[in-house]
Amino acid sequence: MTKPIDATDDVPDDILLQRYADGDPRAAGMLTARLLPRVLAHASRVLGNDAEAEDVAQEAMMRLWRVAPDWRRGEAKISTWLYRVVANLCMDRLRRARVVSLDAVAEPVDDRAGAEEHLLSEARAAALQGALMRLSDRQRQAVVLRHIEGLGNPEIAEIMQISTEAVESLTARGKRALSVDLMAQRSELGYSNG
Amino acid sequence: MFFDAAKRQDLHPSAALIMRVLADAQAQKPRPVPRVRGGWIKQIFRDIGGWPAMAGLAMGAVAGVWIGVSPPEGLTLVAQSYLGGGGSEYTVDIMPDAFAELWEGAL
Image 1: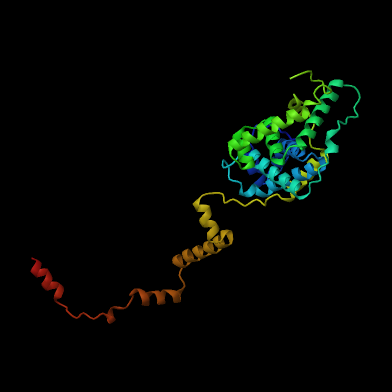
Image 2: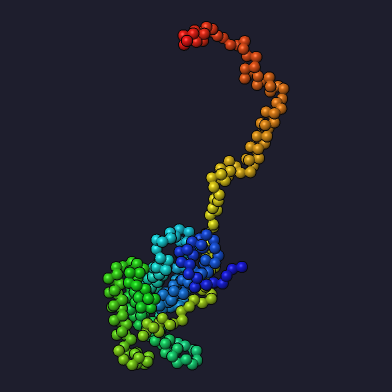
């Protein structure tokens, strides 16, 4: 009998990956529960398209399963490695197609009744996503990793394979551009000033 | 503020995506490499061929003991011819007094 999928277990990611490589069926479920939401959220914010983000998230996880037997413990952080894979997959898609529809993310859509605060929050998130999509790909990636995923600059530098100074520059310029972009919508989204 | 709203956003994977990812994990599951357990005695046991080889060795050992305890008559004659039984007529002493001289000299 197998235990239900549980992301709260404190077993480190690399140990779980080792267990998966050794044939433990629970390990894949735990890694999926722990890593897939982060992978999907990042892809979704960078691509601005849920269907594309799901494809990227699935592909990134597939690469994790494939690398499992050769993963050398302690060499790299699995989440950092996975973010890098997602970042590269997103960049490939953005370069290849440029099919992101800004209309799809600019309008706040919510069919749930009530909860005005929830609607406002969704509207703000949608407005931010619209503004993010107007940044350059690299700026968007850096801003999302820094200000939404909450990663530190050295880890972002590792993910994006650039220097820490370059990350600082990208996030600073990106944030400035977002402020200018969102300024006009501040009052209608419930922000009074500053 | 806008970032806080984005962090609260519900971006959880759908059940369908989770199922696809788990199916991939199952399909990509590495075949476990059998690990050698036990110490060097078990390793030698495996190297010489395991139980089939051990059966042959045991049979050989039993046969050896049996031949030692109750040797067949023909084998006794052959063994005597090899091991010196009745072989004195073939001994040639080329210096019959050498040992006696050496003995006396030593005294």
